[in-house]
Length: 208
Length: 191
Image (cartoon, rainbow over the protein chains, first blue to last red):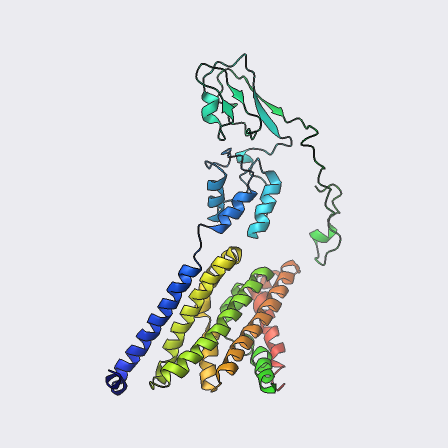
């Protein structure tokens, strides 16, 4: 065999290249097994930044499907509950410029709200239960419904389907248990080496 | 020891692959828009260059020369490079998914970066031993990283500078690269 190869240059060339290819293929196969990536780690990271209200205002059935869509190149400004801070966080994660919130998907509200059902007006139609993305409404057909405030994400989706308009969005009242310091304002631009607009920008006093 | 220093200085500055030998210009222009992605690309390319220099030496010394197949160098080295780049791609995808995303298509394109094949072929034509050729590969990578990072830092500044309309974009980048190349020519005769 070796004699045959050494006497026949074409066979030798073929054997050498095929041998190399087999060796590298085996190494790569081993590496592929060793460096296997489960799922898409980017989707996990984006999903952690989203507010997890599962409200569907972005047009996707929940936060994770939207995270997957962002990882595939969708716009990052479709999340009203997260607001501008979420957009900025995703933009800095993906290293892209941060756009304004897309008004088509809703506006960012300043106060966190929670749904409240005026219980004596509720007719027990279960329409709000079907609309709730996080199962925060308890009740059954022809029985009074009520909202589990700890579960409610304030997404407004139950207000529209209610036939008797008995659902109010109430602002969450701060209690001693959940009061926190407000985040101190960041200092604005201190110095820049860039010419033009940026340099002439006034230092923002109240940037939150 | 001195010999190793000479190899490093020679491969990083005097025979810089990008600015003196004009090899590997595609990522030099393509990934230099942002400093962060340039640093990632520089690290990936250095990794590939060093690994390729080692692997191609082994292939050349243990397979090609004993069998008298020196004429197969180019195709055998391309095989080596493709395997090393594929390995690097898997490695980066596992360790840094963000860098993987930022580099995008330029990561598999390291395969066609002619600096990589250039290093492998020059190592064999210069008859370097294993340690020398790995050092030469690393030096080539370090030189590539140096100019890529410098160039992207300059381009980030140029983005904010007041460039005449007709020179904006690729034109001013080409001029900058040309001036950098002139400056690197000044290193010839250093050793």
